[in-house]
Length: 81
Image (cartoon, rainbow, N blue to C red; front, side, top):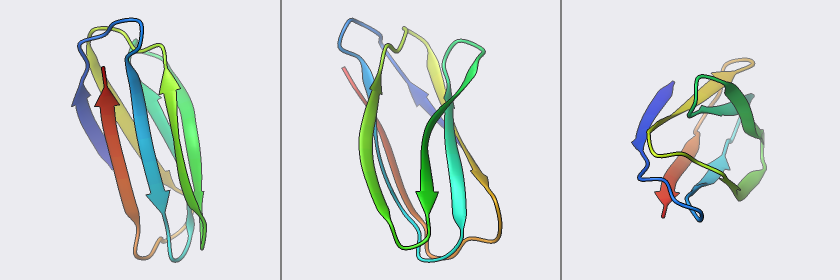
């Protein structure tokens, strides 16, 4: 899955996330300057929240790569300026 977010940039611009999976696992990356960087991992039964700073004034792509079949996933991504 790929999510497309727009970022206005600025010193405090960050991507905030929340992940939860009932089954399976996934690795979540973000790309905002042509370089794919790891954001977090989602593991069966765990809930993660966090953020990453240093976003530029451009489109940010969030990429979710599953390692196996996943069940009942909840993902939330938001750009905060």
